[in-house]
Picture 1 (cartoon, rainbow, N blue to C red):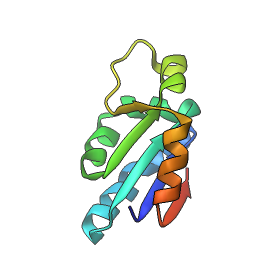
Picture 2: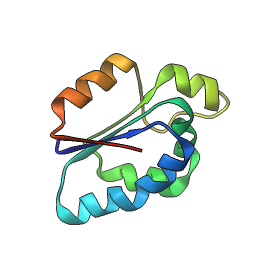
Picture 3: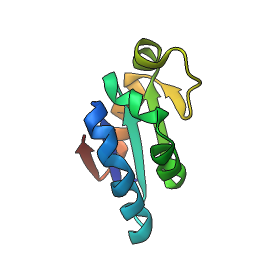
Picture 4: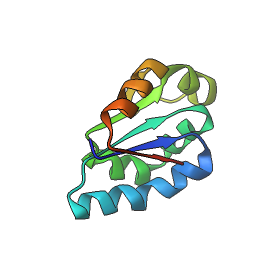
Length: 96
């Protein structure tokens, strides 16, 4: 994977859709890991649509249950161990 977007805040989640679409236009592989209140961004339909081109989109399960427990999760539930693995597999990490 060329780019991993590490989304840790709600404000960062709002920045992700145009970046994800730009990766798609440029033919760049990307993935996302959502944690802390960045998980709340997954409730946005525009963000979910932008993730359609992601190699992998994972949310910290504990953060999801803390901030969005009442909603079904639109991406893969995972752990901080998966976060570490994704960072190791990525050529670049962009923290949002």
